Image 1 (cartoon, rainbow, N blue to C red):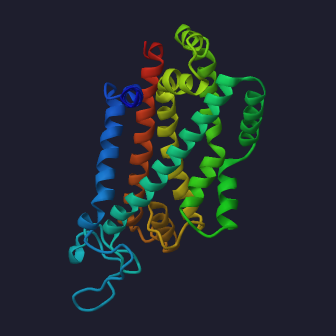
Image 2: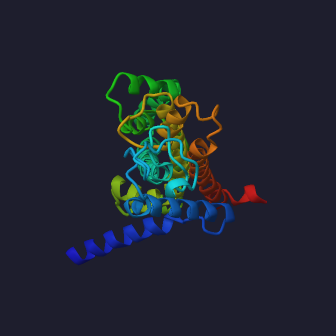
Image 3: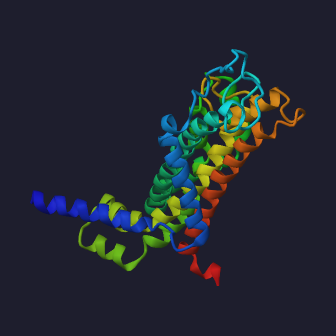
Length: 299
């Protein structure tokens, strides 16, 4: 009996991984996956790639403050800030903050939305009515002002963005997955599972969840971009964690130091490009999942 249980569990896990279906066949999605892979490698290897501590105030060989150095001067690849901090090192370490917020928020949004959609769509009735009224409330909350309020009245932290997204942005995922589950629960193989005495939990995990995972990943990939953009916006407005180096913090620092007026493009263009690349990668991957889920759209 234990061997049978272990085999069933292994089979279920294998079915789940098979259902993920990474959209490697779509060129845009493949490009998005490559961009993510590069930034993930950068975030992991940040201590090896970055030549300096991102918060360290540096000095020149003449013991002067290494402020406002141009790219290439004194060995600084992208120059330095007005406070003498290495811009390239801040870009590299900023990848950690961006991906931490992006992937954590995406997981929370996809997980909460998937659970809500599964329960509402499968059980229906009062469960469906209650969860969908919660979704209506979430739709009525303006997202960015909500994040600003949470950040303003709590201790500055990158986790404010994650919490805000988890509380609000599951609504889209929940609605779409609910509609998919409403269709799946009336399929023949689900009815057959009920006839042979399978429990609701087993039917949900074994027969329905693998079929809605691509949708979860679709909305999760979109949520990554939203999370990174939101964190950058909050940091730029001054509500981010002052102790965490992020691309939004770099833009705020450049703005406060009037980098644009001084034509210090090497300061604010690199973090802006990094944000654009990571956010675009998420939407490229979501495009690939759309082609997998709705192949008729590509015709």
